[in-house]
Length: 110
Length: 114
Image 1 (cartoon, each protein chain N blue to C red):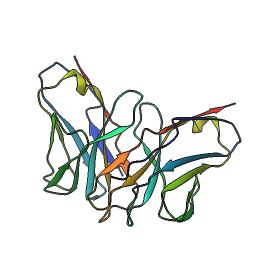
Image 2 (image 1 turned 135 degrees about the vertical axis):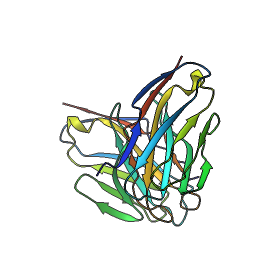
Image 3 (image 1 turned 90 degrees about the vertical axis):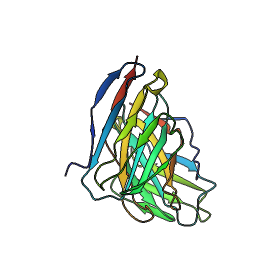
């Protein structure tokens, strides 16, 4: 399994850019990297996915170095509503198994 | 488009009782998953399915059973409920072979065993 490791928590202020890094040392050649946002009492919501280099959508950017053993989720100009837990997930493409890490609790302060 | 629907949303069980958590998706996804999330913790994979008729164990399968008779439905069965099974249960699905896209999660079932 591609076990992931993330910082437990991060603090930021409104308007700042936030970067959350995830380590996935055992990632396989065909594995993609996905990120999710979870608010209390809700299911996780898919944010972004990538395979290599950089991916950007209307919500975030995802940076993946050449060795693909880590990835960084970048949230531009965060607001209070971005306070949530963020998870990276590497779905195991060989067996369908997927293991979440413990997530990063992001707290955005005014 | 309903996505992933889970029922019930809440349930209280007595020790030793059994129940089935329902999960239905209308996106024709081949992969489906069951996770549990204990308070303040991450998600742990219980069982998954790569398609109708095919299921396999995840990290924490003990005390649970699943079936996948159709593409749409992936029920999770709890036999002889124990307090350690008090948790929030999430069902998820995705497509691809192998999966390459993001997962769609249901809103969860909050289960308390007393």
